[in-house]
Image (cartoon, rainbow, N blue to C red; front, side, top):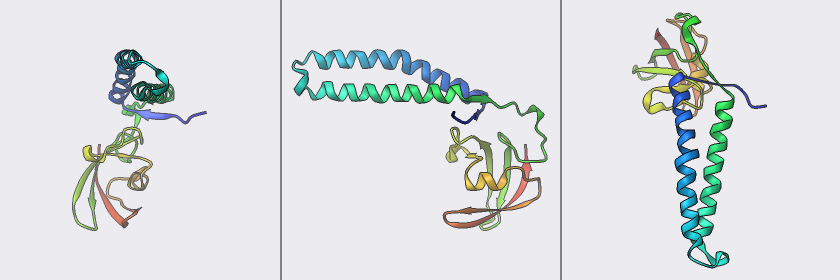
Length: 156
């Protein structure tokens, strides 16, 4: 049994739309590519056909993965969470005590993590160090580059 995946409502809708597009437009385009490649003649020596069939397999794998993810997904309702502890979907402002820089992070599931947009996975080293901690606390995260200490400045 796959483990539960926690997503924001926005990401759930995004995934549902991606899946719908893959199943409709993606499959239609793939069928057209296979038909075109098949028209080139002998299938035993048809590289275009082989490539199209391989792409079809990757498309179906992608569809299958998204279906499994959505089947195990749960939208997180943060209304019952307190603002005094870091939790999933919390927006956290921290100060890196090693370089005195301030960062804003949103605590998300690994499926939503995107460091460029400030979304860090609760399972990442920094995410694990922050989860459950309180405002004003200093935490240490062991990352590949070494130990980073953070002070929690704000939790939303």
